[in-house]
Length: 100
Image (cartoon, rainbow, N blue to C red; front, side, top):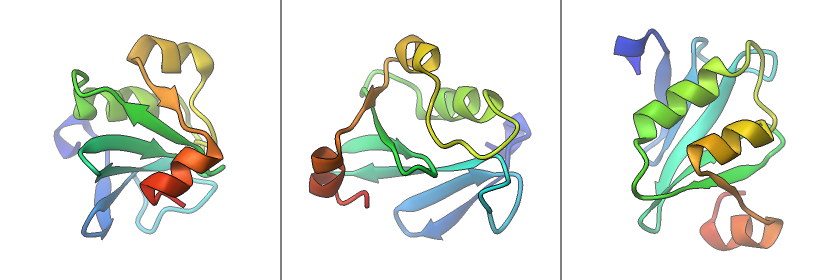
């Protein structure tokens, strides 16, 4: 991400924060990315979680989501979800994946 001019840091061993501020706050452009149970997920401040298909490039998706907003990302815009092939998880799916 750094090569793309985007900051990031590990919040814990399996959770990376994508943000140009450390620590990230709700007023900053930020979200989380994690790899759980064999899949990548993007998690926003709402919280909302999005499943990333295996054929997508996580770095490119993170860059597109980050550049889509100048402020905290609470949800990913529907047109971006469609373009990137993301799928928003239900609350039950978020619980099952351990994302909340």
